[in-house]
Length: 394
Ligand SMILES: Cc1cc2nc3c(=O)[nH]c(=O)nc-3n(C[C@H](O)[C@H](O)[C@H](O)COP(=O)(O)OP(=O)(O)OC[C@H]3O[C@@H](n4cnc5c(N)ncnc54)[C@H](O)[C@@H]3O)c2cc1C
Image (cartoon, rainbow, N blue to C red; front, side, top):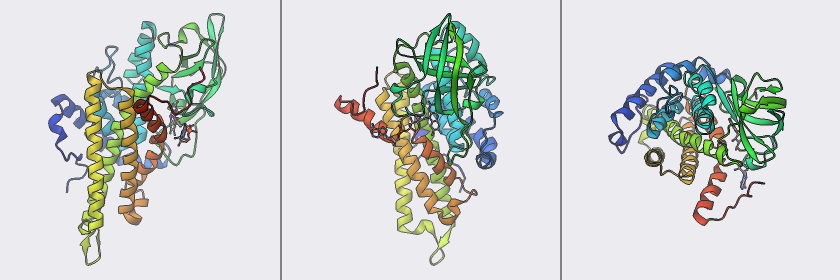
């Protein structure tokens, strides 16, 4: 049986354009060649290899959706397929790309001045600069509207004070998109990480997403110039949430990559592993039921992201569509990874197989960018018109 075949049970390839297939296949080949052979060691050593950023730039991943400034201007479906393939390798790799594209370049492109775009976008697209996105705080995760980081006007600049937590790429970034409360309300700022008063200590000893850098951002009397403000960000959380929408879209596709990797690994294992009367595990009814469930959920997840990708390309995808896909696909990716781990028996707990790593990674992915139950509340709000979470303070 061919390894890593890229499960496509209902022939979705027939719905993709030539460009989409080409983009998907070039990422698939790169992940097979450059990521799969080393990612287990990187995971064990708690390392994200920064040299990958140059290769991601050459592959057109960085800035894939940016128009101009060296960006690829690719469709949302193309971008989704890229994330799918990256996360078949590892969620940490997809996280790096999601943050760079959806949480750093997107706000600069959408809310920045021409000078800010010229200064940052080409360098980010080429992978010469790295960025991070600081919204979450120690006391405000699911409810970022309560954030405490402050930005006060002083002379012709802004004085920032506060702490951000769980920030992907924090310690390796050149620029941080920081959300802070001003006298008027919450606004976004571009903070250069070599500014006095800024530090980004790394959060060590994670069980999950180990091949990814996670950090605190500490802002202590951090003085930034007037033009650090992203002027297009309206007062309030709307702009911050619009960035999350971009990243959540990519996560929903990435989760499909995890499902493929784990389903294919489990299938290959049960076809060869023999138990009871020297029959392959795959010949037992309960094992087939599990394979059938995995393939069905994987196929439904693929259909959901492809449809939402097409809607997004037509400008018709809503935050509720994306929220549904993020929650559903992460939930089933975690379930499939756990099932695969179990189907491999004792082998499933070793580093020889990848389902254990994907399973642990998905524990982060199901939590970040809106935890699983918070997405139920977002959809519940959409369905009923009644917000069940407490509204933000402003
Ligand atoms: C590896 C990693 C990387 C991250 N990267 C970034 C980043 O780059 N930038 C950034 O800003 N943030 C980042 N985050 C933070 C992430 O977005 C938050 O962890 C997430 O929003 C959840 O917040 P919390 O951890 O404070 O959990 P909490 O908000 O404390 O939630 C804990 C639990 O309570 C539940 N819950 C919360 N509110 C309700 C409610 N009203 N009703 C019912 N249940 C509720 C949640 O579903 C969850 O199960 C990252 C997190 C991780 C783990």
